[in-house]
Length: 242
Image (cartoon, rainbow, N blue to C red):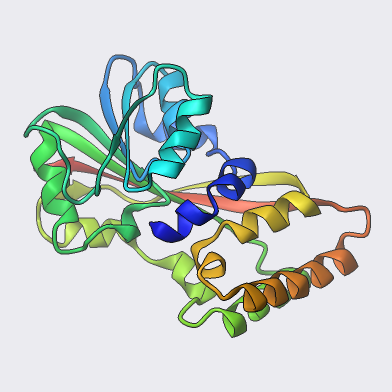
């Protein structure tokens, strides 16, 4: 998570919130004790709180949680590795992991989630990705990213994280829920968002500046009025502790 610590400001400024359909899939949250694992700057934390949940934000990055605290009154927060939770067994009704499950140790994350959930408790993980694949600017955008960021591929958006959670046999996982939505955003905000992604943040400064400059050229050509409407989908998986 160290790469996000370095871009906490960009992350807090430009990362989008999650569509209502995510929380519709979770059902009523009033009164539930929810662990928001990989909470970052508290985007999902605030949305969960607004729906009546008692939320504990868990993240390995103190700078990220400090950002969350400035925007989230009476935040309950713990600086911790989400795969080694300082939480007693059976304490939580729900564990949520928004854009974060893939950062946790795969050898322990499912077992740890199972441990801290009550009987019949649920795990929910979701990821939002732009899905403008039929647009030329978007393909050019991804080609630039793939060339500049070793190991990063657009196909990584399509990983079946439900199968990943189900594999150890600790959760019964339902079908993926896909929530389509549109994001209205300025070119400047989009560029700030791009700078907050880990595969950009870890680059050497000169490489990062070159990448962002190349991306900006694509956007300036496609969006001369500096406003964008981009199609997104948020994919949600929900598992019940067995």
